[in-house]
Image (cartoon, helix red, strand yellow):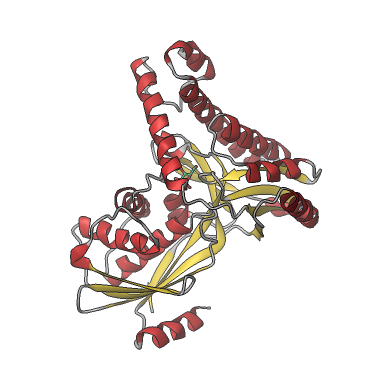
Amino acid sequence: MIDKLISRFEEIFNRRPEVYSSAPGRINIIGEHTDYNNGYVLPAAIERRTHVLLASREDKMVVVFSENLNQWGKFDLNNLQPKSKRNWLSYVEAIFWVLKDQGQELTGADILIKGDVPLEAGLSSSASLEISLLKGLLVLIKKEYPPKKIALLGQKAENEYVGVRCGLMDQFIAVLAEPASALFLDCETLDYHFVPLRLQKENLVFLVYDTRVPRQLAGSKYNDRRLEAQLAREILEKRGYPSLKTLTLNQLEACKEEIDPVLFRRVKHIITENQRVLQAREALEKDNFSFLGELLYASHLSLKEDYEVSCPELDLFVEVARSIPDCLGARLVGAGFGGSAIALIKEGAVNQLINKALKETSKNNFPKPEVLVVSVGTKAFAYRL
Ligand code: GLA
């Protein structure tokens, strides 16, 4: 693969690339919309990655070719400014911007990007691009940053330059993932550890069902949820509850009069989802996959009813999944509002689920989904060629 990519770089730019970097997309097993609420998450990297080849230039121009989109992009390092309209190039600009903000001296670069993380599917193609670029550029300028810092810089680039106020989960898993493991992360303390994923013991796989529901609005709706959560946190803080991670449902119940019903439901989701992450971690440690599956279904319900980030296409898939006995659990993954769902299912039942879901989807005139079985991947890397 890499040889082919190098030839492509040479063909496009008429020179040799200097650095190769690559970072994975992810699924999130459980812990949705908890990261920016200082809660727990349990993602795993997938074996779908964004690859980047880079060579430095003597001027201040960055020239980028996206193989997937078959598009060129170009910008001047001296003119880096967040724009109101974002596109794929904004993510590249953002990474240069964040390194400049760190005081790094940067020259221009020729860059080739190629990936197989489905775009706009809720599998974190953007974080995989950010982290791949960050790792690649650091090698190019011969600097080393610790993993947590790289993840935080990826997040900062997306928050402050691209304008999507994402949490830290996607960047963190892209930087740190280990083979055959999920990563448990406490987003408040940034303490983390790996949890074994012994799916093969019970012939289980994770299936990704990408609804292909356009997510153009996802950014702004996502930002709305963040604002709602922040508002709720401020109210609860005044009541003497500084952290949603330690707040109990009873305590929340006791504040019901002072809190708007919508905000109440948002907080209810965060509390119950944090509990589910802790339970899921334990289930994985004990290889208790049927319990894990139940937690996935419960998470979906909570995301649908309390956090309100689902959509009919995702709900339909989860409903179909429930009707298949060998499917242990399913839920929407990532920000929601379209994008993908995951299902934890016996390998032998995958086709049954796909066929039934496709039938129901077309009956409802929903967009034709893309389905893939993902294997668990590993962390980002970069090296000089
Ligand atoms: C997106 C964000 C993450 C996280 C999820 C929801 O993927 O990038 O930080 O908030 O949504 O859990």
